[in-house]
Image (cartoon, rainbow, N blue to C red; front, side, top):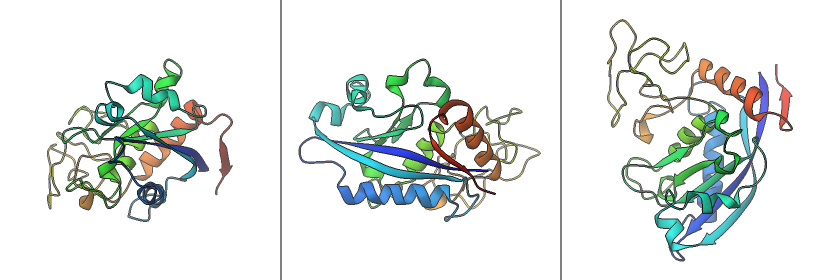
Length: 229
């Protein structure tokens, strides 16, 4: 497995008053490193994040409507395909974040990156989503993972063999949920489901392999990688 270090730029957008403080940005990076190393449970993916810089922009329109203003916002983007650009603004109750996928970089490099609601950072004001796991989830997409409920109970699902098939996304944190016949219980504790933050704890070894493979194909050239075991 490769030891991958992802250079990371965080772009904090505010309305001049509301927005992510520096302490929350640092806490989010720490949470990413804990989650991707398996410290909350699950597999060590071999992936770590290095904070290379933070920008701060006061723009009320960008802050309130990041989707509408996406192209303008992402002109702040730094680096190549190996560089994670994380944009923090205010999205809304129904959408906590969104991400591009690795294969999209070739066609639209200017749009590459992850947008997350600043209130979902560790200690934030988003009820049930205040541990920074929205960032963990969306960056999973940026690294090539699909939702655990991708394609429902159909074969291949999320293209990872060791995540159990899941017919529909999880809400809350159920003690048990099993939506597909013939498989095990739904992976409600997986970072790529929709469970509450208190319910999530890890990635599977198969997800770690998929992220490593996606990195090698789409993002790894010129990046900081070493062979680890």
